[in-house]
Length: 398
Image 1 (cartoon, rainbow, N blue to C red):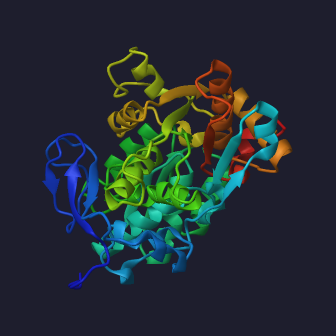
Image 2: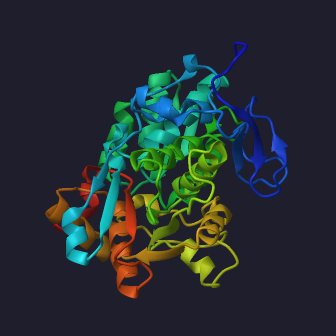
């Protein structure tokens, strides 16, 4: 790798998310050597050291936040124009349910049709910078598509391991990008076992959720964008579909970084974070309820929201931490409720969202009914992908 004398990135180190032991940010890393926990990037963030007003002149992609991303040299950037997705006002549904301010950030407008484009753009850029020979991923669908696309752009071989029941659109798109697609009976944890077998010698970079430190850095840009698009004011509540949970953790990480930079007021109240899972696969809910010590041995079932079929998330402890720090909550939504949410968002707002996006809307309705949400609060929903790819799952249910 070429010597970088003055990198744009302010990255300083990686730290273990459990014990905070430092690890180098300038050599290949997977999980922490000490605790086998996810590694998190840390930056030199001094109040006033970066001028947020300068952002206005930068390209409308996630790379506008260049200094707080870990890539050292722009020559290795692998980008398809990801990020800066629109923040939409849902006036019709807001009026119907008595919500004064209901917003939706539409990540389905990213390249490859989902928020996974952010994380994989970042991860593949770092893979290229660190000299990886190729990449491999277990996926429920969208992440595999994104990795295949960004590997194609980077000229890196890609191996995608996905459940056999994954909708055809995801599989076909991976083939078009030239990826080696392996189909497995089961859920994403079964795919992860297959990845370990295929990659026993470590010749490929495993970009599984939180098993490398950089996908979360791309995902956190959703948090930066939310703040910038709302003129540096944050919503009262953010409702997020949490399978692996990288985005939930990343958005919270972004808020903490912006406070350190002085981009948010020192006394700024951060949003209450809501994690939404599928009733068929809700390990976080079961842990919170005290039905299990953690999700290590949880067994989920398939759901029409493929991205929520993550029975044993590596980031469980970090998700629980975000919910605790934000005074947030978690709840699960059934497949039938997701279909109802897709129908309502489509017919009321002209949005064809992924089942995951419908789940966050149905969760919002439940929280409003229970009184956890108040009518005068500003609520922001995250739709993580386009409904187009899920047609096999919801065919005829409109």
